[in-house]
Length: 276
Image (tube, rainbow, N blue to C red; front, side, top):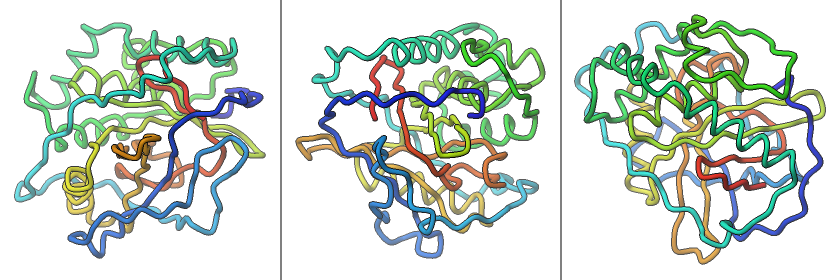
């Protein structure tokens, strides 16, 4: 995100490990690929050789009615050891700003969800993809010089989906939250600039995540790969899977699970948890 200033990294020890992976759509029925190509730690960037960029056209996607759409799992639990963590001021403010912007204008957000999906409940992955398609078709990029202020999701929708990457992350998160799904916002930085994008929680077991990833790969048949990340809790008893929901302007991708932005990461959760 060009206008989010690079922050000095906080030296706290977190008892989770974060990895990124990619599912090759040529082998949908195989188990999830779990390549440990991205530790998402502040002192290390994603190795560029692990990514393959490819442009794809959104036109015609999502029209097939033969694909069974899986449900999306409920909101995950967050490790209790983080609840008492104290973050530096800049992290606390950014987390608070994201949460306020995502939670604002709930009535407008609910109306927009109905406008996009035609539904008020019973949402599944098909509806989440419909939201992704709709927002990306209407999105108009606008650079925001004010790094300290985030527009509320309803404001951005009222403006005709005009904004930058943090506005996109806020709008997408607000829409999915209203549908009962869970997202987290990732800010990423490299030597040139920064970026922000949302990820969608898709479960805490391989079978559930695989079903959702299979659906995405079949619906967007042009997608060479579907990218996701893993959050492994310290006790090793639970692995949480998150689908990249970055906007189509990033690397030309036009489907959920596009290639990840290369950089160093800070992750903001809806309950105030911050991970590095």
